Length: 282
Ligand code: PAF
Image 1: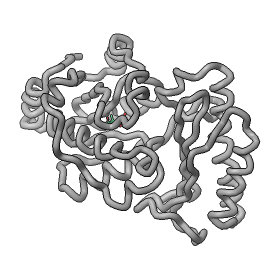
Image 2 (image 1 turned 180 degrees about the horizontal axis):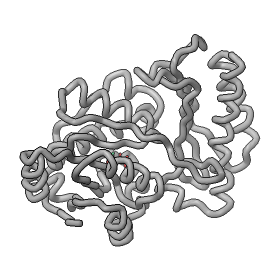
Image 3 (image 1 turned 180 degrees about the vertical axis):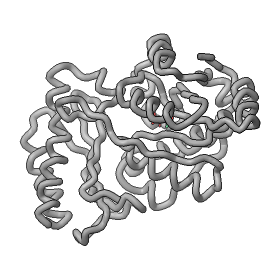
């Protein structure tokens, strides 16, 4: 496994590999890797000749300085996991080489970023769009893999690539959960044992919503059932809960057998957690 920190070096290497007609799978990450990432890496490993993982905590996508400072950084441990998973190339740049100057360009995702994460984290998706575009330009992937835990991110990146004709295929990979149902996330490392227990109720509320939906309840009734359950969980405070179309993230006002996903964000012990569940698959 080769580890690169300079954009120009990994660019030359991945371009050389693409000229040799090798397919390159890429998993962009911010490190603090866990089973959820490993699942992405294993899928990408199966489907590509060459596998690149990037590790970069992107300051542009944090709208809260404290969240950026607290973000876990575990490079040595991450590299040893990636080596065992058969990764070929790792790109772990320093901030100065990604952003020699603060970028002036931003990416506006229109309506799709006015809801959910975008509504509560101003500028977050522009920061994601800029870094993902740079990572694609630098690492030349054929396919890039994104976890569906960050459903809005996955859908926005997919849309960005289509709208801007970026030559990469975006693959969405299902959420990996703990046995408690808690969606795996680097942020879970910041929770105490009690916090982990409380956080597992986030998924339980989504599962209750799914039962309602399956009984042909309306989006409002479905949402209210989850909210009633969440209100009873001490230590959990919900920020938003939306039932949306997985195509354009518009609110669904009727249950018309259309694809639907319920998305939630909440806080446990001051840690912001998100999760989602398809009520009806695409
Ligand atoms: O999902 C993440 O870890 C980040 O948002 C990403 C896609 C690596 C961009 O920094």
